[in-house]
Length: 354
Image 1 (cartoon, rainbow, N blue to C red):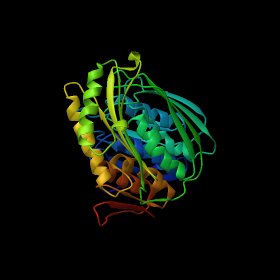
Image 2: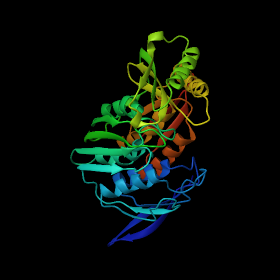
Image 3: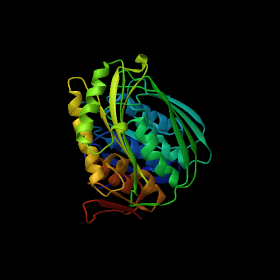
């Protein structure tokens, strides 16, 4: 994607406006979220068209609108074109103000994706913040809360800030109704290298369900045991939540290493057999374990922003997804920094920032 830059007048100062075609790259909502986050940090306004043009339901969904609204609330930013179903918006960033904020998606839309939009700006703000996010915590369109807590935030905390997250109530698709709380102690982001996952430290598989028959979760675990044959029997467990937090079911596979934890999830979907979801999740986990990369595909997506804003460092990952490649392109546009991508011996890829 080639960056296009227009000129606009901001008071007596001329500022460029970054223009983005949302149909390019992976063509999803990540382009909107990452652009908002980077705009708040860099001060660069942007215009994006053809939003989510490659999705079955193009345009902004409720969770995307909430994410952009959150960016505006924490900063006094101006945004035009923001509406559910909208395909174009223009965003002019204000100054980020730390504090206590509550954002409610109002559906099962992902609380984690709203967090993705405001986290980096608040990490780089001049005071602590506390977020309460209500909506979906476990749905098929985003990494679950457990991934944010155990996989993503530990890396962020190594870079200098202190961010803690806790789940108060689960929110499964399609009902939602979940709640997470996040405390942020800001700090400049220090470049780090995440090249080696370290020695294995344990594995576990958990089927979490609510408002559904127990046998669905049990079938998930049975298939996962078959495909993760070298995992010990006591690594597998079923957890039932109160029925008012569902209905829903998710299989979460966790592989812990000295330097990173990978969480792979499979969400229950109407009409999709439990065994098929478990088979797919186990295959993804086996693929990660067999590689020597630090980051799986979802963690790689999440690390592009903080590493680009730190202005240095590197991480290794499995074969980059189109999501990751698009995140890299957007980060280059806003920061102007070089981001390298190089395949390594053994099949992993090095993503370097400078």
